[in-house]
Length: 327
Ligand SMILES: [Zn+2]
Image: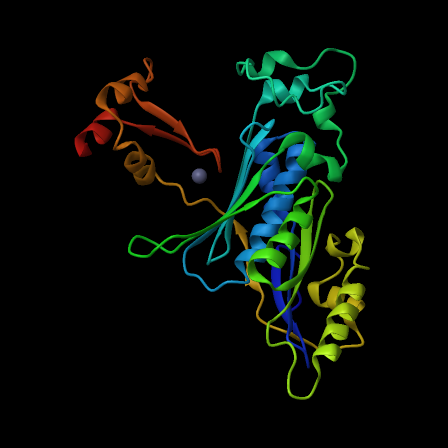
């Protein structure tokens, strides 16, 4: 079956121990984007995070939830979170300081030392002379301007009775693509090639990894080195209008890049934009709150506690008795 939209396709270069994944998010990303309505630069970072999450999750065996968080304690954008379940349900959210974002100016691009801003949200849409700098950034400036001194946190959660696996790594000053490549180089010692693309409406990417046993009986290590170098050189010719075009299937792209090699493709993973929230989960998450705090949350008109899921924007109305009862 050919894959044109919202796919993740695992593949292998035959006769080598090079494995790869190719991903494209169309409808999934458009739904996420339309729901949140973030500024373009935040969308760019979040879509890249979603691509990385999908690629990384498919490199590990797990049954549960794979989460990637990009965090910057003093950044204008504090948090990007995307997660994916082993069933392929993806969701994403960004948290950022709207006031600092709107007031970012070329003279003071990072604004990172100003702590005095209270979140006054929508009132502070920049000073009439042009757009805030945070809105018009090159990809290579996004991280250093919006998320300096950041971290990448990967978490695998396989349910109640299992250990959570978590790894934390420093985010570089350059792109997410670079940080992710370095992460593999340093921590896993696995040679990895990553390319991420985003154009506002679609996002996608490609990852190639040279597995540790990449020299086999019939080829020398030098030959394996050369093969990986050749494959990554070919992969680096991938263009955004190929990976993001729904006129080209995953198989078409792999053929364009690697037609001199034999490619073995595996079953593609079904992906969808789907949140895991439920009324029960919201109630459980509040069950540890002190009673006074719960009473404080009650909406005086409806007499209910109104909670909106930050991922999917679904609204829940909860009778406070339901929370107090289980406390
Ligand atoms: Zn939700």
